[in-house]
Length: 264
Length: 287
Image (cartoon, rainbow over all chains, first blue to last red; front, side):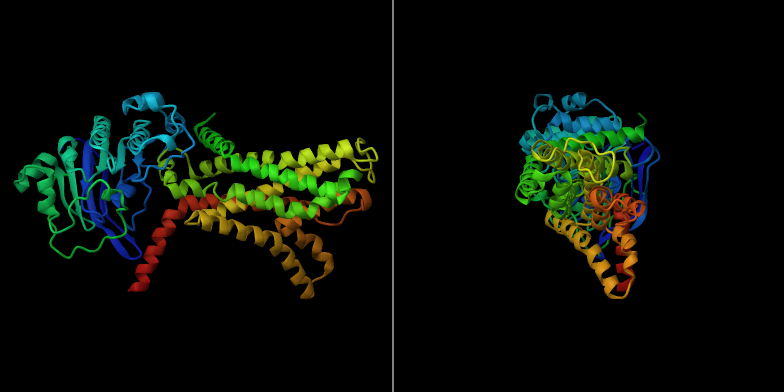
């Protein structure tokens, strides 16, 4: 990747109850779609939480050259947590209207961008899981942030909705750095510009997707995953991937393969 | 409107809409109206005048208003934190202080309607039904007057606001909805009983009774009760006052509200860092 760095993670560690969930993670995030993959408990949600500013690292730091979360009067980082958190009693348009009033942007255009124009007047509580996630993606991209962090935007969705969610993420990646965690390796293959493989809280591999595949002599991200995260749990089914990602990590005492220009 | 105030206004409108769409709050207000109406009807104060009605209502008000304020406040800040939406809101250009102020102002506005409304209706009922004539606006002490009831009403709102702010603040450290409500109730019990028990204890320990007027004002309930005696009930029969130090009592009600707000801002702004500090402490102890 030759784009400028929009977020630089430097030696980030996060422990919960003394157990390290992330351990010395360093990487750079550039414009385009960066997919973070790894088994359950590998620290994906924690890493994305730290990138969004929702989680504070116990060690290390994240640098945002264009400005980070809560910097200045602009929205620099957009965030969709693993569990879409909007209030059930508000309509999709009201929900985006609230965020647009805070961060700028056009709620109707954002709804149209994810194909939810027809559901604008529906209450969030009445939206399907897939529609809620699309609404979450629309919210995260409102205000044109430099970095968009999407935690498992496809989990629990049917194949068509997954494709829509990833396409929406990829569109946002035209102008911003979109960091997306996913267990859906086929969609990662189709849409990601860069891949970060986490294994037990550490970066097992990171870099431009094409170059990583060449370096490891594999044909796709699924094979790459098996090669560098092999021995760990295999990617979960969509239903399993709904489960929380944090708090199960342990130290990786084995050798860690680290590669890729985007890793620092 | 500048950006900072704009953020407060946006959060305020959303929070007010949330309260408006929660039918349970309206039910609570109706319940409060029924209880207050029943008390002035059964107690006889309502048929006599505003001051007797206030006497009938004072003790129940000291429990019911804090209770309703806690119900309004315990989820005010907890809801977004528990759902994870706070993490999303914090990516937007609104400060922790702006967010807390917006939420608390909206909830306080709801409190004015949900608590002030039933009290105002009870006052109207007294005006229409009490005998002798209570339509006189008192110009001197010793005369019952709607103005005295308005004073009572004006004291009820900051009294409730103090509990609203405190319950919202303690809910920021809760991890579940149930624990948030339990913490709110704890704040309620501490406020309703704690201040009076502390005064009684200091008296039994040999403190001078002349200091009661000052120490009573320190708790929200003591401050409220003292102000009602000083400026509503006492006007009719003890115009020389001396029930409470007015300045200290007002400062106490405002102070508890501000303390709650500041604590809530600190919890939201610094909570993740405190979490990390605990992790560091744990790591140091494990060594």
